[in-house]
Image (cartoon, rainbow over all chains, first blue to last red):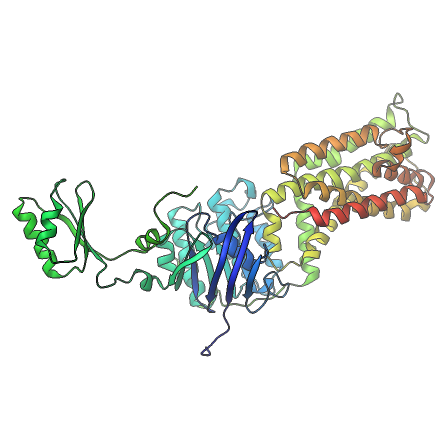
Length: 309
Length: 252
């Protein structure tokens, strides 16, 4: 690969408004070829709008978007990309294999539709019309339609929504296989574990703006003073006493009833102090763990904890 | 864990051949229509029953030769049934189920998305007319063969005009509203739109339904070219509906 390969997806200053609501508010994004990028964000963050602009389904109000160096929606672009729209898509009366055959006919070198139907576990419902498939089955057919044409770049909008755990893991395995074979994957999700498991890069967006980006490791990297020691003990311990016993700069709180958290630079001395302090109080510190921040912690810190309407 | 042989998904993008895309898309459209029981009722069973009724029941006023006149009107009805009502309802629900979005995300060019639907509709109309024509011949219809090219032309023109009207209705409104409206309009056109009965009211002749029935009657019964008037009415409705539909049709 050349030192500066052309980005597979390049979005700069993207703005999209719906009436008075700004769905995407100056979003920048660069994805290199052959990588998996996850757009992570709460509902209504602007993920789908961003992806649908890249796919050519919506027009941008401002900013520029280039996909494989072309304008979104260009006729020359569509054979090169695979799209899995949110919620799938098919004729209500069509059967899975017929739908996949139709999409396969649009491609020059498609994968074998029968094989793909089998891989996606749809062999048992080949005679079922699309409208009678479950949400998860419709999603799997939609994924098959996205992959059948052997695209260079696939957009997967909430690919595992409505799927059972087995199907979710299958999708994860598929995305890994795509990546191994050099396919660029841009997916949206609001599932932390999905982003953490699949993506080379995670872009966290909220209210139409990028609030953080980096590899999952970078995003969850512990800063030296940003660690947690958690333990469970009898509720109502006087945390100010423990705080006094610990070195300067460590914070102690009872997060929920009986669940204590010490935050700051956690070293072996701190762990020892906590256990001996508990012993002095005549309690046993149970389930004691030194926690690394999860992507979920990062996500909630950045996007807040309140529920979105 | 499911594993895949390396290279399984190695990119090999490219667009399929245009004739094959058109063939597969049109075949899919036609097959889905012919497999749908409600569509068959609307496009085949009801027109067949009405053809028999209009031909045999002398209480219904019908110009002589009776079976020929009835056949012409029912050909028009069959075209309205599938190109307008059937197409509108199918499109309404296709949009609901996201198939237009799905297909427009594939390498299928936009013009082919329209062309495939048109060809699919023409295949269905051809099958309907063939069934109705055989029934009419059995009932005693004597078809002057000189009218054949005109009949074919009118079937294509009628399908395009009513297809454009069907897309105009089915492409913009919610599926349930499309379902209700498309059936009501079908019934109104059948009864008072100059299809089953001749309606001696001036503006009815300006309806596409009356124009198609009148034009077909000329060619089916007399074997001659249709009048310029009805053809002009059909073309005008088709052009206006098509132009409007390209602005109002939404993918979902």
